[in-house]
Image (cartoon, rainbow, N blue to C red; front, top):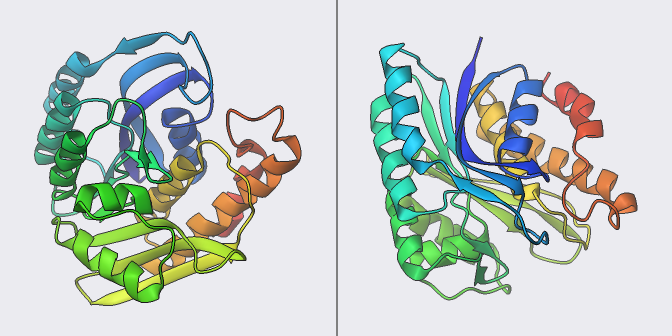
Length: 277
């Protein structure tokens, strides 16, 4: 049975990070181990007065116990990391658990729409870029790519620009960067990837729905990691990830007022199982 470990925070209520990654990857038939980097009463996207417990100091103890148990994983997948200390600890985790037979996926959560999320800075983006040098796959949006590369953010671009950004991301040290939220008009949106080993670009675009749904980046990254773990090729993995994310958005859209805090991904899991067959 395939095994994935995902390292990110968990919100007791809300749909992001581990509350998305764990059920989605598990539904794909993959044993999913977790290392929570923090526990929050809710996620931070619109909630007020939430509680927060930092678990940074617990991560090395978990890693050491696992190493003593000789645990091995087919993939290591990281999402939101809240501090430079966590980045350093995760970097050490990569060194300890990387094998010749597994791969590392980093979703370098930094911001969106040209702005940092609360608490992140240019200095933090530099540290995240350094961590990405240890990844096989990274999954930034255009904002995160711009911050890590130190280039201006723009919403007006063509295919040549996307491919230039992807090539620059390879310069960070990863083998296959994936850009999410790629669009060339108002009708379609999706993702683009660059396999630097074979010097080949991949695109997957589907219907663009003009609304913002919390947690879709986590959905995409989780499905992407799961599909790769199951042996799908890059084009198949992109298509499944884009199509399932769109399905979740479509399912959420009629309930957006009550579900403002996250995506209705749960009713879509049956379709995901069909997509990976």
